[in-house]
Amino acid sequence: MTQYAYFEGAIRPIAEAKISIMNQTFNYGTGCFGGIRGYWNEDQKQLYVFRLRDHYRRFLNSSRLLLGNLDFTPDQLAQITVDLLAQEGWQENVYIRPLYYKADELIGVRLHNLRDAVAIFSLPMGRYLAAEEGLKVCTSSWRRVDDTAIPPRGKLIGSYVNSALIKSEAVLNGFDEAIVLNQDGHIAEASAANLVMIRHGKFVTPPATANSLEGITLNSLMHLARHELGLEVVERQIDRTEIYFADEAFFCGTGAQIAAIASVDHRQIGSGVMGPITARLRDLFFRVVRGQEADYMHWLTPVHQPIPA
Ligand code: PMP
Image: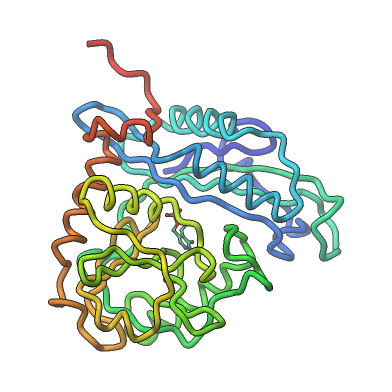
């Protein structure tokens, strides 16, 4: 159980990390957040946090989008996170949630002249999507928020109403997840994960200009696909129906990890089970995040001091 949070400038008991119902961000959704995973390596008794500084770079960019002016560097936020995780003493896989919010208690929809605040908490987390080996997916009747309305390039709290609409419609209609189209009618992503298809042996994914998040898992997989699997990686527009013809398709994200898509709109994708390229990438990804691939240790931040040999 979570015991601590970083709140109002210090690590405190989680029970003390409370905000008022008059809080400006609670009323208007004017904050942003991050989602980061830490993976427990039992052999090394080590908790490795995946691409911690890159997550905080995106987090600070999202806060700037909201006219925030945080006095933190990615390194400082990374250090606070490591201290928080060490204090919790987790010996299992965890999820870390940093939040940026406006700390004022007032009525007034705006972004400027408000006090900036950061809070961070962590909790144990296994799978986010139960059926990672083969999801039943639909195309959402909702469209993705647009860069001209609520920019999906930032992880903005308010824009997750869009994600929640997409997710609940899919689940209540009997699917595991949904693919959401952008205002132009092309594939953007899932409710809270990026989309990749394997077609004619290529790794194909929509660019961030399709109104998807600049995913850190996606960025990592693009690198691994290119450099470890020798695949051609293509960022391009994908039509709704092109995914029906994919050899393989999967969602990727910090929560979703790598989750294979078994069907879309009742059409089977490939052989209907996780494809060979998806499986290879997924195995490699799990080795990387657990600290079992020497070439990728620079993506990991260890929480505990290594035990001297
Ligand atoms: N898209 C959306 C809308 C998300 O919420 C997430 C999860 N952060 C992703 C994509 C995947 O991004 P990442 O790999 O950086 O977690």
